[in-house]
Image 1: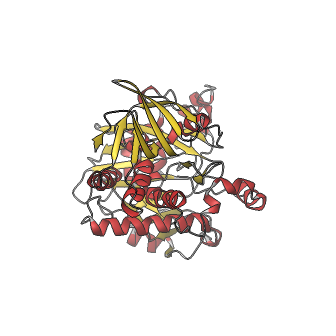
Image 2: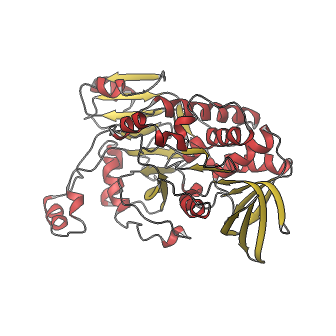
Image 3: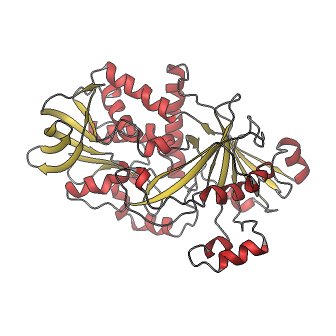
Length: 432
């Protein structure tokens, strides 16, 4: 993408070149034919939170609004995969939800919308189809419209389309925004302070979204929670290469020995590890049928933290996480158990911020004057939601047709008391 070389006037300045900001720019330039769009970020595109993505997608959500929103995003990814000869490796093995519960009617009934679901019950039937799952699993729910992508490849494909129509990018940090007849953004670059004059500003700054919103005079109801993952080379071949994305729906206690549990209980900073931990441990093979790596995740952290300029400086990184998530995953995929005693030789421990609202829905749309817009709080679902989020924000900006859920995903929902009460009463927020 062509760097901006001088102070300039643009129609639309997008702050943030993660997958969400890139998607907004793509739909503005390619769908709505806007030709004066500038992406601004202090980093290279998709090198911060977007680089930490689990790269999964699913239309399994506990509310129809989110089902419809993500279904639209999957539709867009299907189209892009077809147009690009599937350059971003979109697959559709689905999601396998596992539980030891005997009766799963409550789980199935809580699945919103008309989504394609299959249920396998009975240990013998489950072992026949999913022999790698624990013999304790009594029910499997297969969410068929789900799978994985390469989020980096998707982002690069969208950037390529932007480049082809003259899209621009400026590498620098937005330090102030002044609102007059138009917006004036001051941007600190390696070459000094630059100014950008824009009719419209889009805040797609990921974990820094409130930093930018405060420059616009708005405080957003979002927080950052740092979640972690590991990827490792599966030398034991514990995870079959054709295994779908698997999730343990059950809360669990980790399999400590009596001595380990006693030692942990004596440490006030670690005693929480002896308690029951929340559901949501997940596992999938990474790298396709001929790969050797596996990804594990578990979003059990609930501590709010401020985003740092460099993820490596994040103090919330937990050195115990690799063992914790391996123990959690081994509870429903027993083939992983040897890695608890002898951890993988080659592994990567990383993390990223879940920027989220209390209800775990995004904020997409105008702020207060139809000249500033926001795409925020994509939590742990940024890669799967980016296309629909970018398309929706671009439609808001350009006066395009809005889907029925647009109001529910905008700031307007905060004034819908009935909806907010409903969401506050829901314990399942679709968080993974």
